[in-house]
Image (cartoon, rainbow, N blue to C red; front, side):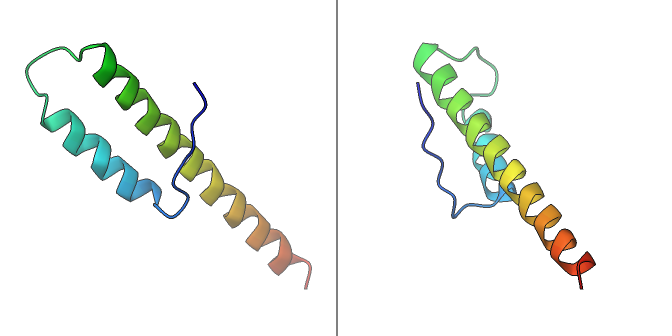
Length: 66
C-alpha cells in the first residue's frame, strides 16, 4: 500500500503521534487494522527523517560552495 506522507509534519510530530497511538493500545496486541496504521505512521516518520536529512545535506553543500 503506498504511503502519502503529510510533509508538513516534522519527524518529532509524527513520533509523538506514534507514541500516542501506542499508548492508547498499551497492554494488548495490535489487530490487523491497527498494525497497518502503525506501519503507515512509521513509514511517514522515516520519510520525514530522510527529507530532513536531505535538506540538511543540501544546505551544507550550498554553504560549502561559497
